Structures are given as structure tokens and as C-alpha cells.
Length: 136
Image (cartoon, rainbow, N blue to C red; front, side, top):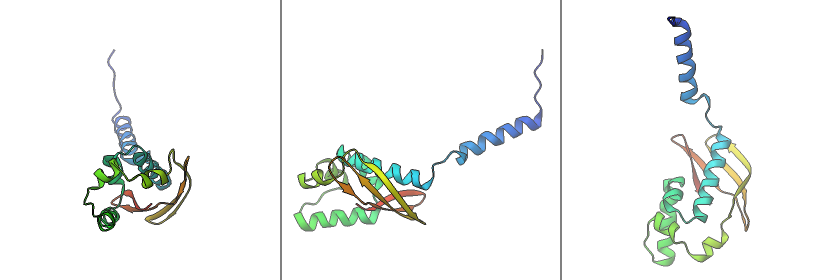
């Protein structure tokens, strides 16, 4: 028995699959902000600079490194700083973060984060389609 395909149904199915693959199932901005924030704080707790540093907006990251150098005289990379943070920083960051609230205004957002040991209100900005931490 030969199987015959209707050209319209094949094209229609292909278009449907393509639409889903290209973003029909994408995350909302709120979900993306929550994911960025949790990944950022989990990475800090794990001392994983390769995971944390890309989540920071470039100017913020560079300013943070300049502040570290000015205060301590220590010239470092973002990854090295996160991999081996000072004890005061490690103690103050939320562990097991839970994002309780997200407020989005265009390409800027804030989040209320609670953790086992502290709270935080990071600020984010959407740059080239990705949410980046601008303050924590």
C-alpha cells in the first residue's frame, strides 16, 4: 500500500513545527529575569565565576573590578574574584535564592530575592535580548 501525502498538509505541518521552534514556546520576560537572578545567586554560592560573570552587565562588571582594585589594591578578573570571594561577601549573599517578586519596566527590571541567610534586590537590564545584572 503506497502512502500519499497531501502537499498542503505537509507544508502546513512544517510551518507549524517551524513556528514552535522559532519561539512559539519562548519564556516571558518575567521567567527570564527569574532564571537570570537564580542562576546568578546560585553561581555566587557555588563560587562559579564562569557562570556568574556573563550574567553581569559589562559596565557594572568592570566598575566592580575597578572598585575592588581601588579598595584592596588587588587586580583580578571577575572569574577569579567570584571563584575566591572575600569571606564578608560570601556570608552576605542569599543562598538557595527564591525570587519573590519581579517588576519589569521596559528593558529594566528589579527582583526581590530571599535566601536562607539574607535578602537582595538586584537590578537588571535587557541587553541584546538577554537580562543582565546591573546591581546586586
